[in-house]
Image 1 (cartoon, rainbow, N blue to C red):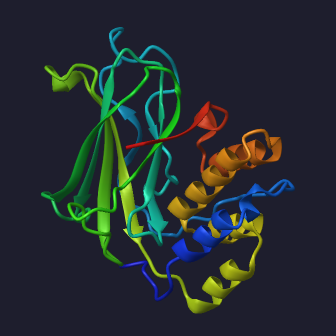
Image 2 (cartoon, rainbow, N blue to C red):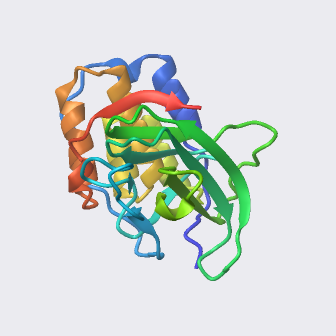
Amino acid sequence: MRLASRILSLNSWLGVCLGIGLCALPLLAIAVEFKPPKRGIPGRREGAGTRGPACVQSSPNLTALLPQTNLGLTTADYPQFFWYIPQTRAKTVRFELFKGNEQEPERELVYQKTLNISGKPGIMSFALPSDTQVPPLSVGQDYYWTVTLLCNPADPINNIYVGGWVQRVEVEPPLAKQLTAAKSGDRVKLLAENGIWFDTVAALAEMRCINPKDTTLSSSWSELLKSVKLNKVAEQPFSCRLNL
């Protein structure tokens, strides 16, 4: 059963917020508790694979920033994905996006990208590029995304990976109106309360990067991750560098 409803994209109000500097205003603490949709899909948000001495050198393991349902909703045609990288000797990770659903054993590869990493632990992100080579996400369509830590490209059996689902939705006009009128912090709360995971994380991450010294935003970020039982990575270093 599709979770997509009818709506307007939230990209416009995000652009307005950043463009006129509202996101840079001092903020009060944002009480962010994510309320995921009831639908869940099998996935793997915590790393699986061999944790040999030549690869992962710290805990926690590779982790996808997703709710426990393994499904995140977005209004974006080209969403931003987040995950935690442990300390590692690996030099690269591979991001992949597939079109399909959990009933389909074979899924269509939509996009693949190998990204360089520093080897230091922290949360990193990647935005799906909006160019002619990558089609926008279709509303109501399930997509499976994976991140693989390339411990040994010549011996894939030792690689560690995580995977989960994303679905693009359209929100109802009343919620869109609320989001347009809300202040930046209230928008994050509205997104979280309505189960729009990827937009919630991206909006709060953007606010943190604009206000890096605002400890209330750091606390809100930690609270958001803990609300979906990502306690192990809630206090981990956060990178504002967008991987391309």
